[in-house]
Image (cartoon, rainbow, N blue to C red; front, side):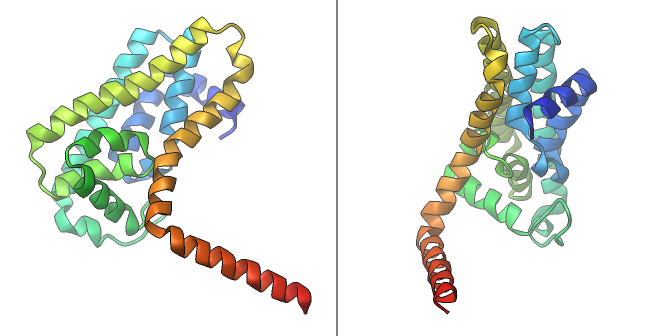
Amino acid sequence: MPHVDLEHIIKTVGYLGMFAIIFAETGLFVGIILPGDSLLFTAGFLASQDYFNIALLCLIVFCASLLGDNTGYLIGHRLGRRLFTRQESRWFKPEYPLKGQEFLNRHGGKAILLGKFMPIVRTMVPMVAGASEMQYRKFLVFNVIGACVWAMGVTLAGYFLGSTIPGIDKYLLPIIALVIIASIAPSAIHIYRESGDQIKAELRKRIAQRKLAKSE
C-alpha cells in the first residue's frame, strides 16, 4: 500500500478505525488482507508528529489485538473441525487454517506470539487454537504477551524512530517497505524450506519452455 495512502487512511479513520482494523486482522477472516505491521508502524510515527496520543494509541491497539485474538479463538471453538472444511470465499481459502494448524503444531503456545509477525498466520492461529481446544488459560497468556510485543511494540518502534531521527518522514516509505518485507519473510522462508525443490523445478521448467519457444 502506498505510503501517502496509508498515512491518509490512518488520519481519516482515527483511533476508532485503528481499533477496528487491528481487531479485524486478529479476529475475523477479512483481516487476512489487512496491512497490520505497516499500519501500526505508521500510526506510531504519526503519534510522534502529534497526530495521536501515543499512550492512548498503544492502549487501543493492545485492546484491539487482545479482543481480536479472543474473538478468533471463540470463532474457532464454535466452528471446530468445520473450520478446515469451510468453503472458499473472497476472504478465505481452505489452505489458510492448514497453515495455522501447521504453525501451531510446530511452535505450540508460542505460535500465538510468533504468528503475530506473519500475515495470514496471525489471523488463523487464534481460530485454529480454538478449534483445537487449546487450553484457554494458556492461550490467554500468549495472547497478552503477543498484544504487548506486536501491537504495542511495532507502534512504539514507529513512535521512537519518528521522535529521535530528524527528517525521518523523508525515509518513511522505504522503512515501511522494510517492515512489510520483514513480516512476509518468515512465511517466504517457510514456504521455500518446505517446497524449495518444487519451486526450483517449476522455474527450470518455465525457463526451458521459454527457450524452446524462442528457438522455434
